[in-house]
Amino acid sequence: MSNEMKIIANESDFILKVQSELEFDSLYQLIVEREPLRRELMREDFLNELGKDLHRWYSVSEAGKVIGGDKKIPPSSLNYYIENLKEYIIPGDAPSNKYVRLNYLSLLKLKMVLLLKDEFRLNGLKAEVGITGNPKNVVNQTSNDSNLPSTDFDNDLEERLQKLEVMNEMLLNLLVEKGEDDRPQLKKALQSLLNSENRLLEGESSLASQLEEQQLLIENLTKENEKLKERIDKTEEAAQKFSEKVEQDETELSRILESEKQINHLAENLRARQQAEAEWEKQGLMKRITGNRSEFVTRRIEEILGTKQ
Figure 1 (cartoon, rainbow, N blue to C red):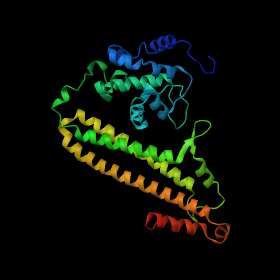
Figure 2: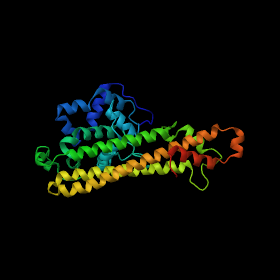
Figure 3: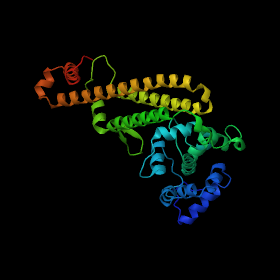
Figure 4: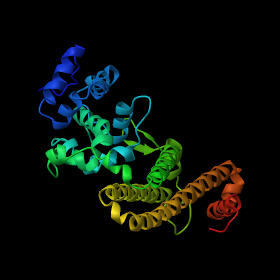
């Protein structure tokens, strides 16, 4: 097959291709049996976007935009299902690197997972696609869960996770932009600062190193939060241990709150450093020649933050 971009000439051709590709897919068979879900899966705007390029590899963030449409789905929500259903979602010929890459068929499968998740839950979906269990034994547990304690705790946790995701994206948007090859790169102002001949602080790591550490911290926090969501999901299968589980989850919530404080602290320090560097550059030539850049930056950061580093 040609490596050139393939454009579907006729909408009906692509629909037939999708139906052929998913003919023996167990989740697609469930979708077909539920007419409202079938219509949602086959929405014209969604299929048109997929049909533009059948050879394209999507990042998780791009997948959230295509699947969610006007209401983008956060990467953390998609990563939760990708990680737990990777044998079903990630194609065998996906590029081998540290970033998840998805093709048009992966996006179709992800959307089917999202449409069925409330009815079948994660364990039910795993059984249906053959990862674990027996699909014949999977039933909708919604009616059986009516005697379980209130899910206010779950809802509160989900709200906190969503807020953390928004904070992560805001921080990344401050620092990162897309390059010519669509890969993330530092914004030009920051890149120019990193390329400057003067060091930010004597004996300390460069700004690039700090940004990498912050990115790694954010990724670790996201992974911890995804693991926490999975542990909470398991409470549905063990109602008798619910009280003990709540105590454990409250401890995890405290960790999340502490993580949010760390992220805010990192963001404040970075903004203060950027402001201090900008003020130094505005100094007159003589002041910059005779002055000490590191001392100036350190002093201004302390003044801006109001505390000693």
